[in-house]
Image (cartoon, rainbow, N blue to C red; front, side, top):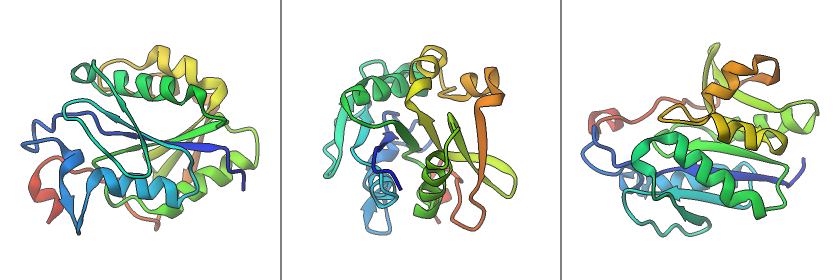
Length: 187
């Protein structure tokens, strides 16, 4: 498999519903941000960038990029992350969310395999037929994805505008893209 796929963790939020930044939340002995970086690295993504915002982060094994506009939503974090990875020799990026600790490495591997097979601009992990995360974006679409990313939408506006560029990748059985909104979700 190609090694020119970067990883991007969106971890800038304040976690207002959770009660604090989810990036710092400990789960099974590690912070959610460290788990997300390990997910992408374990799936063969390099380099891995983390977008911070509400709190400063130091994350071993990752390049941390601060998003000063983090409060405007995920869209600005996606834009900041894609801009920061423009220096990387990557031809694609797998984007993961910090608050989804149950996504499995195999999901990342399947997205990369779909891209490596050719002809994929956007690959979206699905679980039991439902779209989830992570999402792989080929470099040729980064600028257009960034241009449409606003508020909390991330890549969704681009995918709605270009359904012909979206490839669904079955990741059923590899984990779950359920997210953590409140502390009870981790129990």
